[in-house]
Image 1 (cartoon, one colour):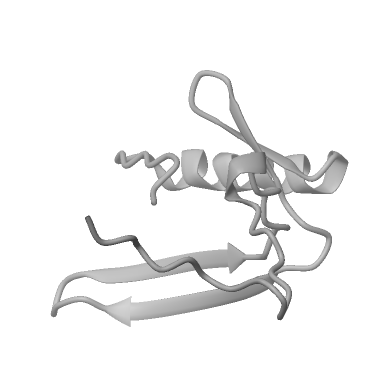
Image 2 (cartoon, helix red, strand yellow):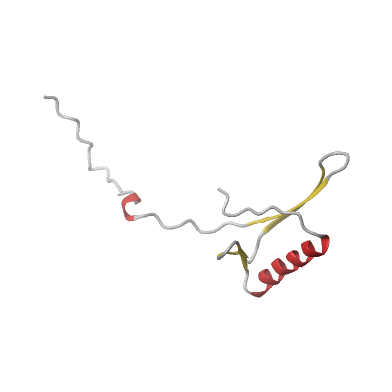
Length: 96
């Protein structure tokens, strides 16, 4: 599920400035800001990947990816399973 995506053409200097901005955000409080008011908190330890590919004779790409796991949100009260004991038997439907 995508949370946010942005694609644009920028100068190399603008790209470097954007990467510095991301680095500063990570270093200061660990949050990356995106869009109008979005932010995501990055874990203290992440898995990172750098991939450089030749897409065609004239195109190269560099992908920087980092990922981490977050705790699962607590289940809603109606989703919590009730424990069953061995003494309980399922009721068979009555025939009319």
